[in-house]
Length: 112
Image 1 (cartoon, one colour):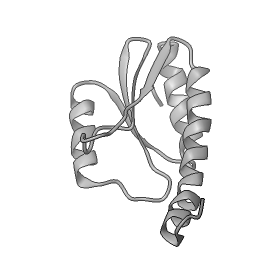
Image 2: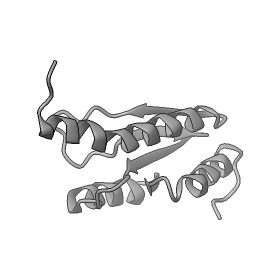
Image 3: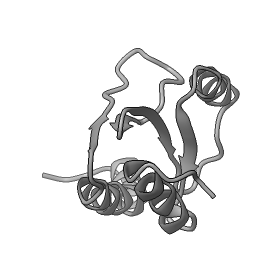
Image 4: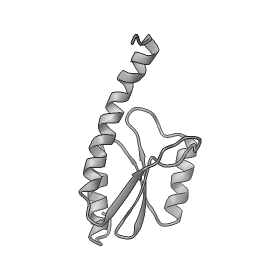
């Protein structure tokens, strides 16, 4: 199978995001009293990438590696936050901090 230059570029550019998602999924599984689902965004623009619950609290996560957050994504995350959810834009740089927050929620401690 011969790939066009555009197809090869897409495959290469997806690799860091794919690795990040895989690592994040592994880490989320380690959080007690937690359940997460990756949202398949076919036709649903702006919906957070992962929705879950930790110790009874809703969680909405937007995953970002290189691209900036879009206004519609910000709007929807704010709606989740106003309803009481823990909301975060999670990147490879802040992943440890966000996971720490989720572990605090899982044991009933306030998020620092």
